Image 1: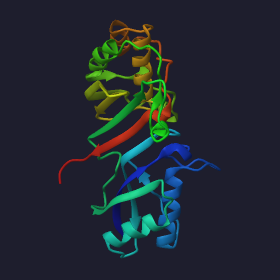
Image 2: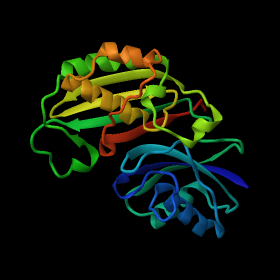
Image 3: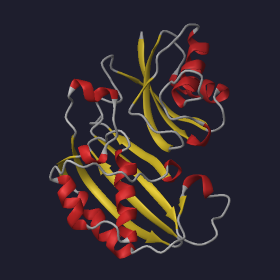
Image 4: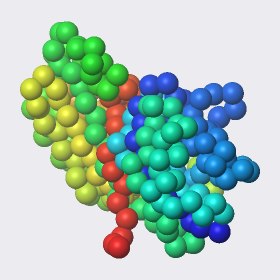
Length: 249
């Protein structure tokens, strides 16, 4: 049995997120269907994390066990031949048997993009949150940096079935940066891991800062363990997972 990993990108517009859900199109389901066709029996494909409905990815790592001796390059070609065109496999690697794309990851990076002009071009509309209304971008840029550090991000998470087992919601943020690039306002966050809807809640909070409804001082309270939760969540279409990092080699 071979442990294979794949690096996948996808346009999440047509999918209800990564994880298999009964009767709904998901990225995991598409991958499992194609891998099962090549293997001749059901195969479970595990990902480096879950993305929400409508969220995109430039680089998601996934892994599965395979008996088929097909070479890595040929496996990549076969996967892309049968997958829909909005899901692409860029890399295939044989890994040690214990490799797990989620538990072995040491960092993940996401970007959120906001189109600021009145007219949003049709060729970017699927990948940005169109918000042409007034925002204090300087305040948003300054506040974004405050997320850097190790905190309990309970206030920025949504309810998750895993909450019942009491797993820690402490995460370390290595980079949290916002900048303007032409007509687009970009936000990049790199961290040790992310909770359910965490990045969208972080972005939702920053949008409220831009509207004058929240502030850096309020953020400090949330990160210090304030009992309330952040209610604002940015739309999924503006979010893209950029990369997943693993220890070398």
